[in-house]
Length: 200
Image (cartoon, rainbow, N blue to C red):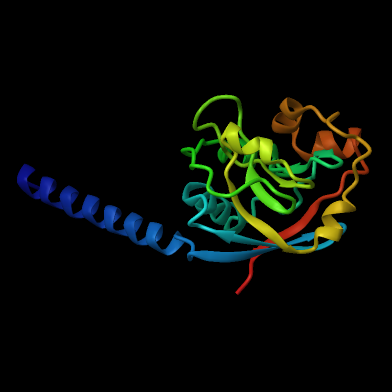
């Protein structure tokens, strides 16, 4: 086969791949608002997400839910009156796969009770897969750059009932390395997400 024919075939193949990637990306884009049902060990929790509040965060949360990333995830950090946090997958290999940061979003809503926000390290553009639900009025987080993506619209009673006896004891480094194998052995009373789904 002549070199020019090979180049032409490669060009067509690359164009096809780019088109497929673009199509997949457009299909993955969430609507302006969407609702997620968390079926937790304490009962159902519904979160309504508004992309206009935090586009990057809303996009990542949508992708994680569609990928069933949160199924089996433990609520590993529970501080009464402050936050309930989750975001490590049941399987440590899955957590590692999704450990990719997203850009920061400007804060457009306050971290009031029931709002849902991505956790972040103390550096720019460090959000990955970890989120928290505010249990109280945590407006002090606004100035620190924590941008809510939405809020719990039903099920706050279930959220309030999530087991808090371990506080901040679970080691996040070990959670990332071992997943539920570590948490089930060392912290067996943790509540968890049975499944997370986009509501039609």
